[in-house]
Structures are given as structure tokens and as C-alpha cells.
Picture 1 (cartoon, rainbow, N blue to C red):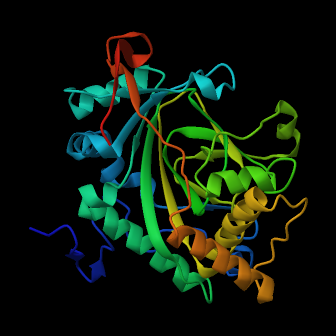
Picture 2: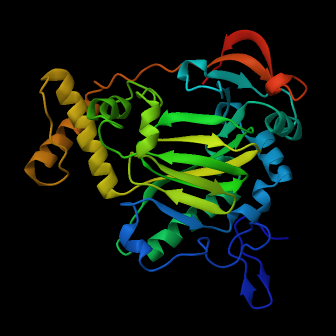
Length: 336
């Protein structure tokens, strides 16, 4: 019997990780040498081999749902007919089996967001390590760290509202098809004050102004199973599932250049609140940058960062036999 972290051998061929059928060779199937020169600077859509992994089969997903601690498993619903962030609600799986929870997602209007899955099952950590080792081997000079992985299992036609992420993020489609809208990471789509509030922890990533006309300037990608996309840092985006169950993986990472951008945004947010300047530079080199990096470090060390308090109010239970896969329950505050 093979352990979770060993690589079984068939003949002379080594299976690079315990990830089911067709899981040999590089993770990225269509990498070209020129991709290295646009990595992180332009939208990059590539084919991968993870969609055939048994980790993301119904059985694999059910096992993961059952094994995940409740504090790492988020269940949500939102209006899928409009763009209304206030319609977001949180729920709980309760005593359902993983298979029952998955059936509710297939029939309903919910999604299950599993965090820190690398802590639940070592095979995901092995996969995460392999992903970034491969990219670092393909992109000269690329050094990544603070890797993380999140799994999203979502109902047909569910949407993820307009938002942006702070670290570098890749979206890996494993099952189903979704339409991804990626917007420029500059005003009016992303303003400096909005980004600063997110970095300072004062507002949620989805608390960003969105107008339907933004779509005229978006890169629109129909992402199918076996494809992934990586966009430039902080690009706002939103997602709409096609009429099918969707299973996606997001990976996040940092590099020194990405951390420099974060430090500047953090320091600018601090300066904007204290000195109230009209304009602030965002350069990530030279004396000005190092001064701002010092401001960010000092602010954090002094404990002056006041993050918004996030409260998880659970007001529905996942129910595969109920409309939209959920049943209203008396609201309660979940422990974190």
C-alpha cells in the first residue's frame, strides 16, 4: 500500500502524485516557452490534468466534506438573478453525509467553500507543492511562498459577485463550465482607496462598486473542466456558472514583488487616513518605497490595524430535499 506522499511506480514510469487516472507528466498540458514572459503580467489561460483526479470525483468530494472541520467549511447562498452582495447568507451542513451535501449543491442554489484542505488531507498539500514547483521550474527567477488552496463546489447558475483578491491567484476548473469576467486592475474598475480598504482589512473583497457597463471592458472567458486561468495581480473579476455543477480550485501565492505591492497599498491606506493627501504614489522601488514599507511594518507592529469584525451568522441548513438545497433555521452565531 502506498502512503499519501509516495509516488507509485508502474513499469519504468513514476506517477507524480496520487491523483487518479491520466495524472502523469506535467500538470500544465500546453505550456509554451513564451508563456514565461507573460506570466503574471497578462491573462494566461492554460490546460491542466487535474480534472481527472479522483480527489475531485463525487466520492473524493464527499470524503473531503466529511473530513473538513466545520470552521474550515463555509456554505453560502446569494441571489443568482441580480448582483446584490447584501443577499449573501451563510449556512451549515450539519449532520448530512458528504454525498447528501453534494446532492444539495447539484440541485440547489448554494456553494460549499472548503478552506485549508491541505491540513485535512496531505494529498492536497502534495498537489499544491507540485503546482508551484512546476511553475517555478518553467518561469525563470520565479520564487513563490505562502501557498494556499481553496476548493469551491457550487450549484448550477450560481454567481460570484464582483471582487478582487489580495495575493496572486489562479483559478483551476475541475468540473463543469463557468464564465469568468476579468477587469483591468485600474480605475474606475479598481480604485486605490478601495484596494487600500481591502488590504487594511476594513472591507470585504466584494465591497467594491460594480456597474453593468464594466462588462464592456472585461476579458470574458468560458472556463471548462481541465482549464485554468491566471490574471494580473488584483484584477477585479466575477464568475457565473453555466447550468451545471461546478467544482473549482483556487490557489494563492506570494512573491517578493507581490508583497511589495501589498506593502505600498497598506502604507498608502495608513497615510490616506492620517494625512489625507489627494494623491499617493504606488512605486515599489527606491527610497519612497522603503519608507512606505517601514510605515506598514511599524503600523502592524504597533497593533494599530483595526480589521473589520467578521461575524458568521448561520440562518439556513443544507437540505437536499428542499427548494434551492436549503432550509431556513433560527439564526445563530457560529464560533470561529
